[in-house]
Amino acid sequence: MKKEKIAIIEEKIKSAFKSRYIILKMLGNGGMGCVFHVRSNVIETDEYALKVLDKEAYGNKMDFMRESEVMKSLDHPGIPKIIDVTQDESYVYMVQEYIRGEPLSVIIRKCGKISEEYIKVWMKSIASTLNYLHKQGLIHRDIKPDNIMLTHDCEIKIIDFGLARKKNEIDEADKKVFGTLSYTAPERFTKKVGTVQTDIYGFGATMYYVTTGTKPENMKSNAMDSFKIMEKNLKETTSYQIYNILTKSLAVNPYKRSVSFEQILSDLSKKENLNRNEQIDELKEQSIVVFLILAALFLTGLLFI
Image 1 (cartoon, one colour):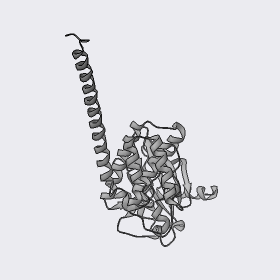
Image 2 (tube, helix red, strand yellow):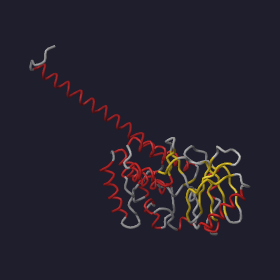
Image 3 (cartoon, helix red, strand yellow):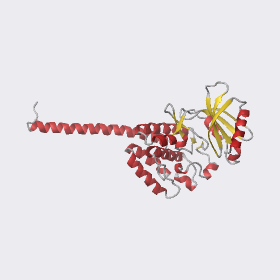
Image 4 (cartoon, rainbow, N blue to C red):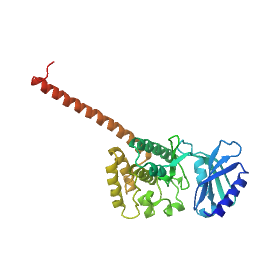
């Protein structure tokens, strides 16, 4: 976005909100709009993210008000709260909760390999938030590391609901491939509409990147070959528990993925219980071995009581 246009938008923000907010800096911009870090002019300690959507960029076929309507209907700690919405002839302005933290994409680039203990916590948090979203009858359609924030309080927040829609609706975005190709489900390249399984694939691809530190394979062509590469990398870098859940999430055929995030949460719980049971079984086996050794020593007279 050109500097001249940004300067115009900054002036329009002042006019739209009657100078209630002071612009601190720009957080990012793209073809559909931009996001600013702002501070309240009334309460100086209150800071927000102000997202500006360009109506012209959306055109006549996409609903530029849908993101704000979706977010206003949601109430979950893993989703930023929307504070205020207004519009003029050119732009929509959404004031949202400001998240102090960094996206998972930045964290992985800085830190490299993450402990599996943290990965499990993140998986549960993301799955729980998306399970809530799906139960509200909505899908996100753009799950990727850039859209998942880790706050300074070590909480997970899912952001950017620009492509979110109701499960039973079909829109212009379903006719094209939007978002980052590496996190796009293979069926989307064949013009199939977004579904719950589309979000599950995005979850799997995101956690693949977090787990391996490697960008997911592009599924546009030779999807099965790409899946096999990711499957191999997961097998070499993670435990069976994570491997099993993520390979199921990344399945080329959406019908072979988990049915819901509720199932993923259940699988995480079951597999943890299974691991604990395996540890108990291992301890039992070790006890039996020790008992047999002691019995043998006693019978041979090498052990005296």
